[in-house]
Image 1 (cartoon, helix red, strand yellow):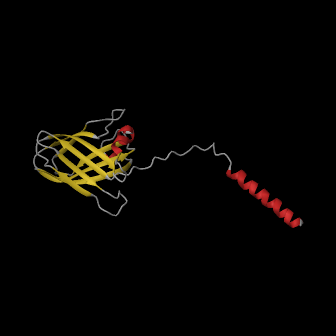
Image 2 (cartoon, helix red, strand yellow; image 1 turned 180 degrees about the horizontal axis):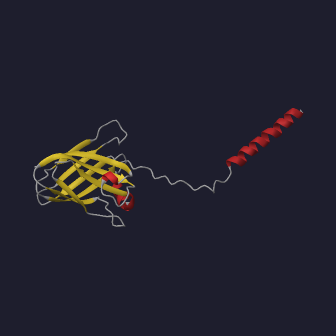
Image 3 (cartoon, helix red, strand yellow; image 1 turned 30 degrees about the vertical axis):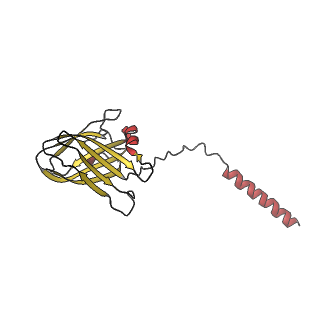
Length: 187
């Protein structure tokens, strides 16, 4: 009988101790803010000029981590010696309706930058058209200018938390949210 009574007392004390430990306050620890990486399934570059409009689009329907390769399309002809007004849109089309990630990129403009990188020999230059609150490039709006006929890769990269200011992608640091390469021809 004494053993059962002692056992009951021990179990009650053990349960009370576990409850006391699990309910302890962790107020002295600063909570960690988790900024989850966005899912970007679609990158759409729209180029508008008097010579005609061009759309460069990459759709990765299963996201970056899925097994399917992105579908890349180019609609329209990129003309030589032409200036285009450009915009880039980032979408998460795994949701219905699609989530426009561009809005978040523009709201958090000090934490993002879009880089446009033409391969050597591709007669394309770009210039930023919008900036963050500190006057550093953002790049969801830009100007694309072509020279003589050429072809090559044109890469669009969205960086999260790059070093600003920077001299380009090479010293920007940060993490790549999405990067897409288009094989383009200036005709």
